Image (cartoon, rainbow, N blue to C red; front, side):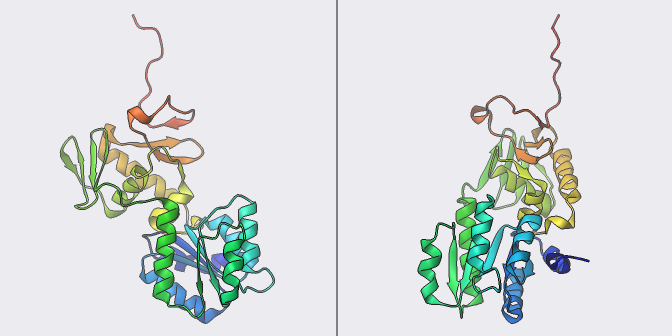
Length: 263
């Protein structure tokens, strides 16, 4: 029998783009409004209706953010957030509360609450606040208009990718994957995280597509590809030489060198 968060997998996997958002809301009408507005804004969406399912879904789906209603039955939103933090899960959380007097309680607790909205709320406001939460927690992603790594340059305005001045044609998804890694050189992303952040899919949709797209990007960029594999973990963009220490164990991607004695 499928779990609660598996029931809506097709909905969660249908919209690539800005990441997967887990909505935890026990009122179906509100959940439907949030689903529609978040999907319209380019997010993948997964909906669950209780705290226990929320804890399970955050573990299994690894969403980019959680929209969490406080007034859940049995296990309320604050307790859900407390348990997430206790197990080391710092997924961004946007609280939804029906009472103004709960705001001080939310922000006063050391739960790592990222933001909140109060009911009744404008769906547009919630989407805007969520975007702000993700910008803050992911860091300032505005950055330069051109990302560079060795002979590789990626123009974020024109979507042009060049190696030694020669343009390389990437698909939209290949471009987004490359940019996502280049923005955070040296940071290792699991396949599940990339699937959530780049595709907006739930991790249960399968991670093989990540490997396929990485292979395609590497093939097109050739030796200029900055993408390295971290065995048993995922992928990272290589740091610029001046920022990189000796290669960490398990990091692959460069052709092996002959370690034997030279004549």
